[in-house]
Length: 415
Image (tube, rainbow, N blue to C red; front, side):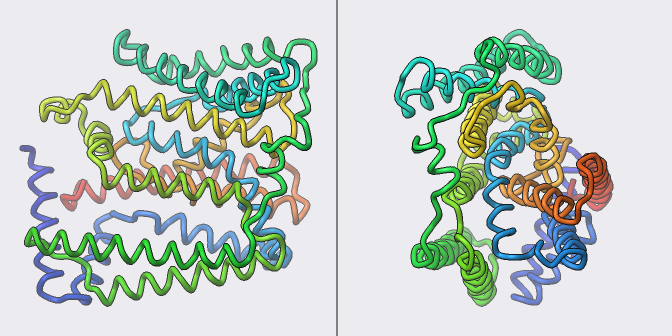
């Protein structure tokens, strides 16, 4: 076992003793200690989002209107789903530069099957998702069997699937989806009713409290410390009040879109898969140290296969939803700044480029930040060129914070 691992274990044991001895106070001191040691989590992006909201609201109060919040969440969801796949591949310390091209290509397949070939929307969507899954499986074979670096094959995919998009669309250039199709209706016009939104809020808070209490029970049975019940109750109450107020506010306009709800459900499911399942622990283990993971008996190639397949599957799903939101597929689908936005969202949300550190919620936080920047700049009448410069600056800042916190964690024994 390395000295770094020994220091990390010692730090974790010190946290256990602090919580056990001082209860809520110990838990707070543990949290502050982790911040000082560079374990920042999602704090930087949350602070950044607050700064963005205050800044744009000061320049244009409409930025925080109910209609603006609904639009931000609705238009953020498709790229956020693509970013969710990027989070997975970044956890392994790899990259996929072709997610935008894959999203556009699979959306074109769906559009051609529905409009030109007369297939049902359900069959076309399933076919497009299957193509996305096969692309990810092909990437995994290239990586695990042939040894091609992920940067190289995904860069080739970026170029190749852009060409495939043009080939599938042919001379049409743009294919308009039927306005009465359920994909267009779902992405653009379906919103959760006010009553149902409040039911969902209560359900979310109850599930959170229940899972946390179950975790406390399991840790107590194993002789480990756990967050105080009072703290769990406070967090659940804050979640209930916060989501309840947001639901009330967006219901002034149209309410939560089903598209955003779908994205949120996918984020929660992937978070549970990463934190609560053996597969998720293996993903973090491989991303942290591939050789150590292999020697511990983890089927490393299977982990790579599953992650690359899921990444392309999420890219395909995001492309389909983006097509429904735009009501069409064109030669520009997935080929503009989709790659930039998806990768930037994952990194800005807190996923480390060095592998082994991040969460599914990084995709949600990151895409909200980027969509908020785009919406705010549009409202104040700033040229789109500035958006790219601002996005680049925010991305650079996020990577710099990650690098500094990584060094701090290493020096404090929490690396």
